[in-house]
Image (tube, rainbow, N blue to C red):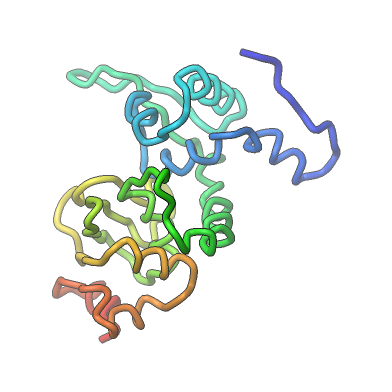
Length: 208
């Protein structure tokens, strides 16, 4: 591993950038906010990153106390990477960056890769309540844990177990919600989001 680079400034912003300012680091955090991930899964969901760079960033993040690596018990018996509590504290940083960058998503470029779960954190900013929500997009499924205090805040694919609400919407609506162009209840009223479920959370999300 190369020696740690530093801005050598006695400033909290500079110290933070010493740890997370390298290219790809915060996107790795974005992926690990979904919980433990295998190296191969991380590489698949970070299109454009080389294997050398990904391996280097993961080692640096482990050295800086942002991630840990552990071996799953049989029959999995593979290594996974996950955020430490220090790494989990980057959620509001990722959310703030996503909010700041949302206006740049007005138009999707032909070269842009997309994964359904990349809409999870922007959508999370616009939802209230607590519980498990499954989200259906044309691009795929993901799920959210609203009000989670620790552990994963979202996950790729169907919800593990019965969700308390299911949302059906499109990527454009997710983007508009993420950049504050409309509120979630406005999107529901306009028919751009369908909320299904009979529990308390579904009713809260429908504004009942």
